[in-house]
Length: 171
Image (cartoon, rainbow, N blue to C red; front, side, top):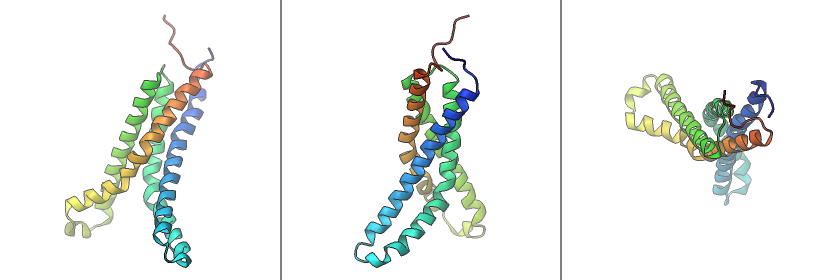
């Protein structure tokens, strides 16, 4: 079995965590652009005029939640590789990482709504703000959870195939 140095864990955990977040971001951006372009079927000359704002909107509204997902998954994967994890444990860790990232993104989005809207907040109903924040980060869980689980499982399988994890020696 190879040595379990911290340097051997950080790189793969970063690739797994931030790779899953990047794939989720690209998936959501592509979905948004395809939806906008698909709705412009009758006006093909206007497709480009609407596709670029869709990409900008996705970048503005999904970059921070996906960054939160990436950081959360990085920490989850780092913790996962520091112990002998099984594939079911990796599935659970991936799900927990996605749920934690979703909760953090929801709280952060709600806080941003409260801070940036200023006087407008008094005019809005609380339910409307919660719905707006919830819709903005729901894709973190919907798109991010399967990719989080996949990243965690692939990381455990990769570490096992390299002999980097395994049963801890009994002392």
